[in-house]
Image (cartoon, rainbow, N blue to C red; front, side, top):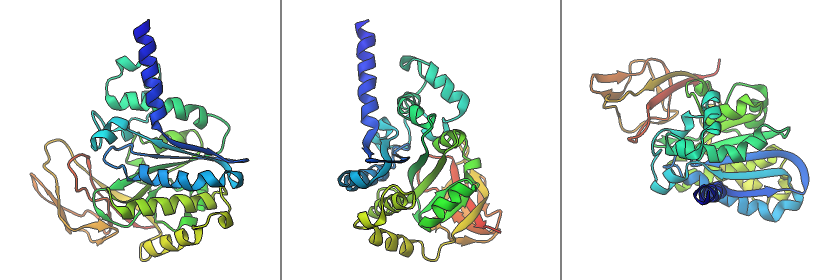
Length: 316
């Protein structure tokens, strides 16, 4: 009995460690949940959320709603690896989530499932309530190039995110089964992924902070005139997205399988234009050529991961 109580205390402490901060405004409004570090080699979003919370705390009397910041995969963040046993952002499937909820911690099959069980104890009461929820899954990427959001082509999402002017990528979510965004979407809320820049860079952190703070205003959480740096953040975003397409559709994903020996050709950046037949990468069977015209997105320049690159094109 004593061992069980200690185990419960340990997990309670770990649940608390997932919280970066929780700022409740004095007025009613939507709940914004920003999570970072679902992939442990992407800690930049955690630092961005810390900055956002520091700015929001003095504004509580003007805030309409609530802002929650969460760390995702604690163990992977500690080791600066994408994951320990399996990709946490492929586990948010309804049947798997049900199984994880019902399984005792000591019987879970991976470190990520234990982390996810802890996160669900925080998220479920909010996501399955009557609250209006906007969910942002913060990520960075191994390549270079422009920031973007991954979002369903739904009117509510487009109306909110178009105000940010950050490129909207439609359709990629259908190729990434089991993301946390899917869990929130299935509950009827707005959920999207924000890819803010290259792993570990100051620019990626600045992009994330500017995007989140602008979203606070666009969602009605904070009045623009109460946010001292709003004009600066908005101007910053406009400059950073200049020249990039605003809305694109997914057309192709290169899947990496075990043993492929995939090697992305150097120098590709997000939204670089490519043509069908361009040599993009190599594996043990030879050259990998572009199967479509369009723009390249998220070229893989790290060891962990099974998505080699994506191709998107302008919305018709």
